Image 1: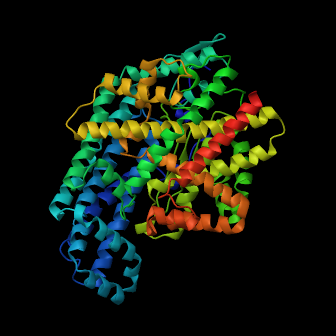
Image 2: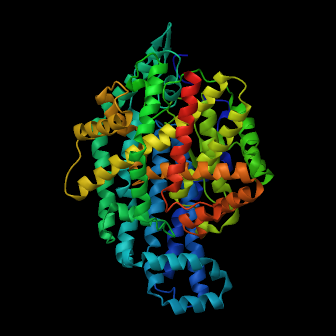
Image 3: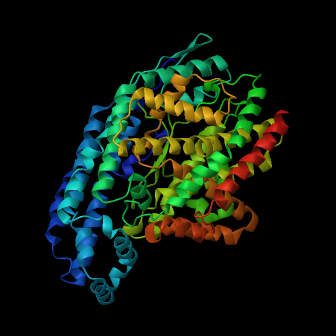
Length: 606
């Protein structure tokens, strides 16, 4: 096939059920207009929160409900754009929805400063007089912790209104990457194989080294054509966050990111970040050994395209062919240790409610994600490739979606989200549990090696690529905070240096193309997000082992963790599940799992 199908040519079963959000664009536009009117519903409570418990409760509920309505409007438009990045109508819809969300946020910006002006004794008296306010106790307490960094109502209104233009850098990068970027097709055995964001993963695990090389080079060259544009968008995004951190009085950007800007904050101590980077660097020899074994297995040569940083390393054995529906059944079996409370709604989402958009089509953006809100399906975006890596991606995103499902089913709107710090725990937990089942059931060394290849793909991304990007990102922020600037040559050279350190001399590097890979990670537009992948996989593998070894008690603790949402701080949520991330021990355990798999790899290929 020389071209991907158009979106309209996909079978309905390969697409998600956005009709459950809005039946049509006309219905969406009515909701957009209603969301815009919500601004006037929020404003009248300014200056009145201390009048009575009932006024305070009404103000909080109206603001949350109106913001939820607006976010659903934005979600619908964003999901449409993700599947058709070249559609100008969807681009326009996203812009319209973002503007309404920003205006609504600005209209309600008085809430937190005004809440902080109320004496604690007044809030306690209000809670006693109006029991429905009791659910907000954690939120009120979290606000007190954030108080030094919350500005006056006027400043907060300006910051809220500026959220849309300050976020434009990511939107510009997204448009350049997903709409404008072009890639050379790969010619192979008389066929022209299209290179795109949705096909690159499949091409990079192709049995032919020539195909892998040509696809990797095409993908890198497509990004290099935009290196200066994307350098400026990334620098703009970093400067925006630095500006916000300084405006709010934080010592630096990392301090603000660890504190968390969400409703209840995160309160992650700096030591968690420092422990991760130190532990990662201490265990680089494990990765050097991994690359050395693969190099030998591939005939004594390992090139950049055999070890891409945005996808799985070149396979040592071909993946078994797995259809979407076969993978869905496998995942349901793998998650059985959590019981029917977990498996039944997940099965319903896979087979009946169409949570997943998995078809490949022209204009579909790269990557995979889970997205939803309270009252919506926890939608999943991905591109299916009929292999074990797609199975792994589906298991991962279902972990996010089931985490969202339980949080939204259990918590009120105020707590119906969860910190990014714990988001990657649930996703990696699913992969770990399904992988354990597949390894138990493997009938041949080749099958076991194929499952290990999926595991290495996962660990490579989370305990190799993401900690390296965390080191890279920290340097970028520190450079900007000291008054420096970013240039494309600097970004390319520095990233290539960091990954060369991780490869330990075992990989022949195309430094220009390797160093360009920072453009593949939209994660860098979410400040200090990438380190959480590494802490997430470490916690996930520890918790999965507990469930497999301890059974129902550990499973119950894990489900309670999924239900906690923002009702507790993320480190407390993990303690509910039975793990302490303030210690380096979970990350050490993660590297111990990796080392044991490297041992098994050496045995199987030796």
